[in-house]
Picture 1 (tube, one colour):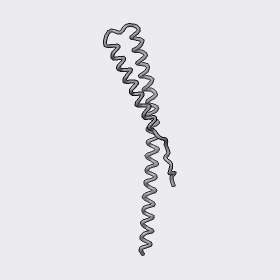
Picture 2: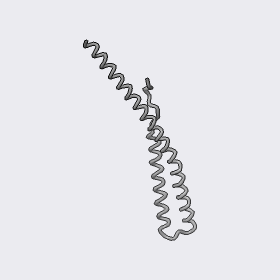
Picture 3: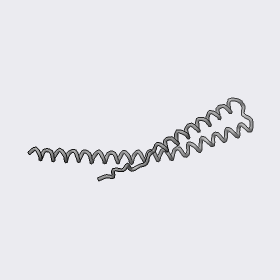
Picture 4: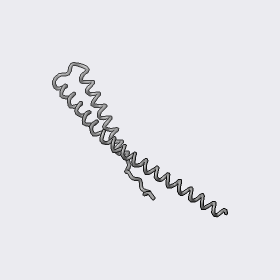
Length: 103
């Protein structure tokens, strides 16, 4: 018999964090586009490099978090399938017992 407690924690905080990281990347990309719309000076080039590094860093860590969510979803899916199998077996057993009572 499988455990009745779900095998993974709530993934919503991880998803919320990823959404915020995507928004950060979008803001940085908008900043880059604004800075490169004219010929950037040396200070603006530094800001562009900083924004590009920020996007790279955000996306690098986002990949790991997405893999964590994928793993959690896989565990949850298998847990749900096991529970469904248990339910099917229990329903079959109940049906058999009801038939014996009717005999």
